[in-house]
Length: 352
Image (cartoon, rainbow, N blue to C red; front, side, top):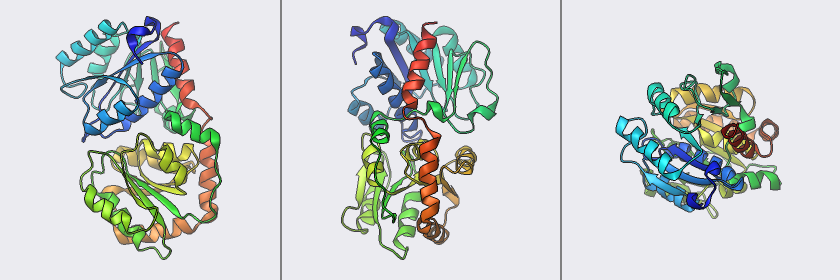
C-alpha cells in the first residue's frame, strides 16, 4: 500500500532484517502483522538489511521497502536514517523486530521515534520504553515483563500468522489416518545442514512417504537437497521459498521444522510438528512448546545423528493417537485470528 495515500494516523514503518545470517523469520512475522494492519486500513513501509530471499518475500507481498546498508542496531547513523525515514513518511507508529539490536539502541529508537511496538521472544528487550511489546511465545507470561506505561501482548493469543495461513485455519481440512505426506522446513537458515540428515532418516523408514522440502533462496546445497527429495516419488520435491507456507501446510500431514516461527505456524493450522532447534535459546523455548503438547521435540540440530533420528521418527510417525493429540492441542492453543488481535491492539495504543 502507498503510504502517501493513507491518513498519517494509519502509516506504519516496520523495521526488521532478513539475510543469510538472520534468516527470514523476522521478515515473515512482520509481514503477517503488516497484512493484518493493511486489512485495518494502514499504509506500510519496511526498512532493514535484506538479502535476495527477503527482497523476494517482501516483493511478493507488494510491500514498499527502504533497504539499509547494515543490519539494524549496528550504527548511530543508521538510527538517524530510520528516524529521518519515519519523519519523511509521516508515520504514526514503528515496529521493531530484531535479535541484533542492543537494549541501548532500541531505547534510543523508542525515545526519538513515534510510538513503538517491539517484538521480543526471550525477554532481551523488556526494559525498552515502547508503547507496546509483543511476545507470542508460549512462555511469554513467565518472563516477568514490566507493565508500567506499556501494553504487553503476551502468548499465542497474539501469534503473527500470514494471511493465507489464517484463511487455511478458517477453512479447516480433513486428515489422513496415516501420515503419508511430510513437509521438511527447517527455516531460512539451516546452520548445521540438518535438512539432509532429516531426508536421509526419512529414506530409511520402513514405509514410503511423500516429502516436500522447503528452503529459502539463500540456502546452501539446494541441488543436493532437490535430488534427495525427488527420490521419495511422485508429488515429492523441493520448494524454493514459496511466498508463505500455506500451500505446503495444506498439503502436509506432518511437518519436520525448525525451532522458530515455523513450529507455531504448523501448530496454528493443526499440522503435527517435530522440531529441530537451531540455537540454544530456541531449544529452551521448544521444550516449553513441546511441554504443552504442541509439538514433538527432536532436540538440537547440531547434535542430530541420522540413525537416532530414524528411530525417533519411526516411533513418532507410527503413533496415530499422539499425532491426533498434537493436532487437537494446536487447534485449541490459538484463537482463529490472533494476528488481527495484535494489529488492532497496536493501533488502539497508537491513538490513546
